[in-house]
Amino acid sequence: MDAQKLTGKVALITGGGRGIGAAIALRLAVLGASTVVCGRTQSHIDQTASRIKSAGGHAEAIAAGSCTFW
Image (cartoon, rainbow, N blue to C red; front, top):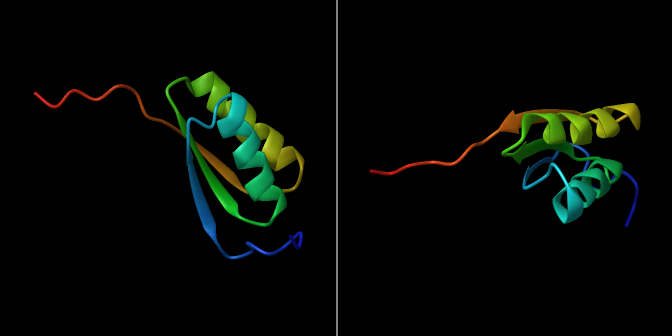
């Protein structure tokens, strides 16, 4: 894929703090997407967003804890 193929697009990545989710977030950023990294642990998603920004990408980290519907 072209390095800027996703320029102008926004990617929302859930579970982006660690593992596969973090890898996907980083890859989408390399392809030019602005990323919104979501996860339960603020420190983990902050770290992923920081890595994206250090590589020249755009990222926001949003913590999304457990939800209760009753």
